[in-house]
Length: 280
Image 1: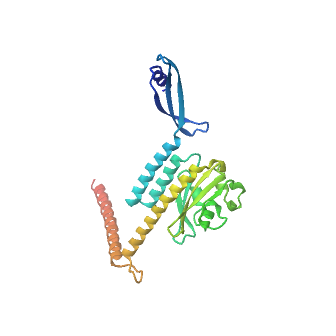
Image 2: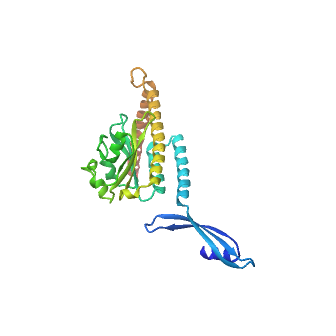
Image 3: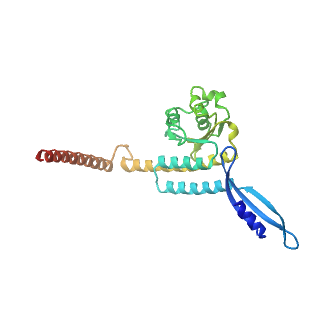
């Protein structure tokens, strides 16, 4: 690329190139390199003006907008919630730097953690959160959901809110957490989206912007899923008593019949196989 740029300058032509580079920490950088030849009055090349611009954030913003559009299309198409939330975490981590993501879900009452997604964290990290009741001083995420506001823990090792389970992030070399609650239209907590990092110095304005995007998409996906579940329940239960209706009964009977048919088919197949062996 450098040779090509020199050749263009020698011909008196400006050049404009993009280069994928990496900084000292291994983070990818997109650099735009522009060279403008400086010509004397007689047309000879006397030098050139070189300008390079870091366009990493512009590329990340474009990549994120594409991911956001795909996720919203998935939500509209009725993709399963688990798949949408996993895709969301992976899309956010693809543009976030030096962090790992965690998305927690609350029960219908908005009081206990019932699950979530964290593709870059081991299963044990998420398992310890299952069943926890949110509240003031219950980790960074539990506190954020309880307060209904963003919470930053710059040093997990020094925060009493992490007493009893700080060894989970410390085992991965993580000592900072930035969490934002996922709230419905009425301000009730649905869950949280968080970033974990080695220290609080890692977090910057770009991480905050990514959290806002993640929270908005997660809220739409969770609310869509809950509405679909509610409509399904209403279609299969009596509105007055809440008891299963005929439609649900027919569905259950159909499922039992299918299961019984498959079981009989397997038994007949096994009998035929044994009979065939005896004939041989």
